Length: 615
Ligand code: F6R
Image (cartoon, rainbow, N blue to C red; front, side, top):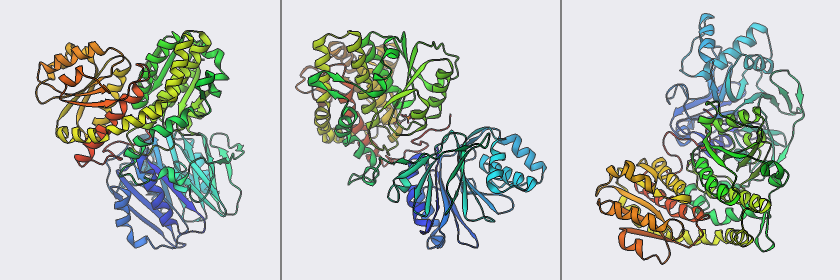
């Protein structure tokens, strides 16, 4: 987590860094800091709080003519969020400055050793240890900064994306990465450094993404040299043309990124299947699947690994893939999978799902599966991300940048890709009848219109939100394909409104959670016409007879549930298997409005970060 930005060139660095940090706040937002070098002095400001707090605190350096500098927005790992623990950190000599995204796991023995050598520390961070280790190496071995960084990093265990600056050699920034992302924007006589390309998108569309264990010395008027940290070998820089544009990373008139992203879903689902799905011709194809079709077809089992919302998309995929292809599917939290010595066979196919493509646990699960010989397929949104590079093959979701911390469009586009995979495999295996196959293709093609229609529930969701915004708890129930949607609805509510919420398979309620139901308890029930409608109706009756307040998501024209529920939200009719793409929409809207009404920071909920690059 944490966002880093660096600049070296001919423009004033301050505004570039501040704007860049604001775009990276999704990565962490509990403290922020900036360092500029004006040719004579280091100018440093840092503070607990958001980048806007940093702006207020750094007004004295806002007009600085410095054309080199770096900034940081933090998600605390070592040391509470406060001014002192904020980055940048300066070495004991006052010459070296660092910003760091990641964790130095062996910082304690390193710190002990440095304390023995007379170093002092003002913060509780692992990062301050790293910058002093670099200083010690530089001083002791009389090395230039780049070499000292390299030697120090070879003593470090953990993850990092770092920028290091040396006041004694002020025309360069040394950067390195292991496990945390780092992109270098290459402009005319200027370089940008950032955790992703969003801070420099309006200046250049040329970017180099450092790979793990690579470092570079970024210097003006000199060709960029990238080296392997371990063996010092040179790597050819690969410049990528960026696909992102400025409009995609702005709010476009919406109050929040989350709302914008909810409303983008009809379009981005279309982007997800564009060129891959041609319903009338019976074509559903993705290059990554076509190239590896045999592996999928011979899979004795598909293992899905993911975290959070992506894990929920994996659960939906379990139901769809098993139903369509009859291939057994298991879905695992990446964080559990990686540490429990799982059984992975060479003829297992592992699908890793991740919006950011940077989630540390998912990345580690992929590495483990590869070590055990499995074929690993990635479903990622961020192009060029670590997971997309670490997997053998994959399919992008093409949802565009998701900036709101709560995932919305990532979820529906992941389900779209996974449904297409299931349909492609079903076609090859003959496990779906021809008519069902065509029916699903056709239905998937019109899903964007149905999502659009489901978005019309916005006003209703707002009305219901006003009634339940002060509830301390909330239950979400669904069955079959909509059980994972219940989990996802509960996650959305708790993460942005801080209301405690739980998702359950509706029938499980009577095995415990029913004890929670009284007249204070709102219960959101996903009850579309297709699927286990009658069973869900019975569950609703059980809640009703215990005075629970029922908010039901129903198919347009429903009569039975309408009579029982306190509030209903109508959605268009879809087949059971594709219904999660629709039923999830009103739940996103409901949590959005509740969070807004409670005065919560919807796009940046407390304690969270968009990209979880620590385990
Ligand atoms: C919830 C949310 C998180 C992420 C999880 C995995 O709204 O956004 O639960 O889904 O951190 O992130 P990715 O998909 O980037 O691997």
